[in-house]
Length: 176
Image (cartoon, rainbow, N blue to C red):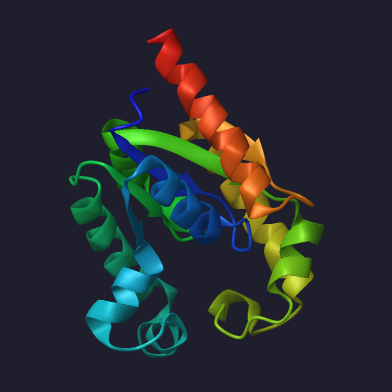
């Protein structure tokens, strides 16, 4: 892996994709993008509103279009939405256009990190713990299927996760 190619961060909500992505991009001198932020910027509304008006399927269509565009850039660190991997074509594009990093976070840690958040539409109805368990059961195999690097984030600070990720990227670059 050449650190000058794209780095795509995948993982569940609360895994730290945005925070780690920002710090990693800064340290590597790369551009940082967050797919959810791009969608909000382009639509002028937040993700919750899109879910309310268009449902999850409408949001996923927007997300897939943004990701198809973003993967073609060079030298970016991209934080993706937690459900990005549910789209087969998107999984293929991420694998093809950069290094895919799975920030693994257990369900209890996801619950702890997201409990105060009000902008996570999938957690607004029902029992958040059960929702997170169901999502993880579906998505974890998809994350693992395309990940070049997997890093566990439970109980860890952004700086420590970023350091481990940089070491893994450098190790991969040395092997190529």
